[in-house]
Length: 361
Ligand code: ADE
Ligand code: ZN
View 1 (cartoon, rainbow, N blue to C red):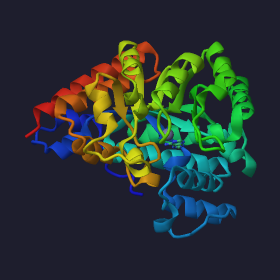
View 2: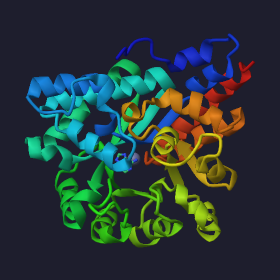
View 3: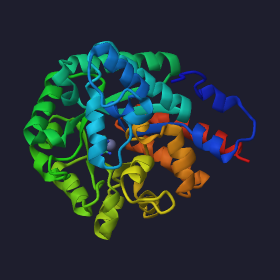
């Protein structure tokens, strides 16, 4: 992966050359709120780490590793790849590579990234090793590119409600400045979202002031009711995916009135479900006034990157320049940075987006 020639803030400020729409889409500054650390491992990196650490992968062909057509096939690959990371330096490498890629392809300025401690513990990587390793990579990317990143500890539905409570307890027992919230991904062994099963873990997290989010309303068969459960029973601050909310206009109205943020993912959802870019629920969610942002989810696993989510995703979904600006500003609003830092980001984004818009041909 080439981590060279990042798009930098000063470039966007000083250049005056006219920009094509594709260049504009790649270069607008971005905050990303839905990217999974294990889903951000480049295939070639996973294969190198498997060889280094003596762990098994189903193939050593980087072109074959990320081939599946169902969410369970994808989740199995995700867990296999996670097992290739063992030492602190492995976590640092992956964190650095994915942040560099976000900067290079999409002018990433700030990310809140999921990590799954339970994916790594069977190989002996402790919570501290995982967090410190990812932290090393974040610091290196920040020093080189100015990009920032905080972390969201993800409970795996597959491991069940007790493991979810244990994970929140671990997060609380090892406070770390980078870990600012908890989330939930995967599916139950029955292939369900079933958010209500995880109320105890979320209650604990909320009681201790952690920020909270959850994947809901994503999979075929999930409904707007799952989104409602996440809001009312789990008490989450924002929603990951949430496409099925469109099935109930009363839940849409509620989310719009409360300005709930949805972290949507164009390429992963087109890959996994029966959506097209041209008629995507993301577009409908936006037009119905929901506060959404665009994200990569698991970039190499869905053959995408942050730039592509906009250059291909936003363009094919029919977003126009001022709507793209809105998507970028929405992500700033939806992030969990303290208010003064958010304010600085708002100002920086407004200035850079205006400068880029003025150059559109
Ligand atoms: N883990 C990583 N990406 C996911 C997704 N899109 N849905 C559920 N779990 C995930
Ligand atoms: Zn996800």
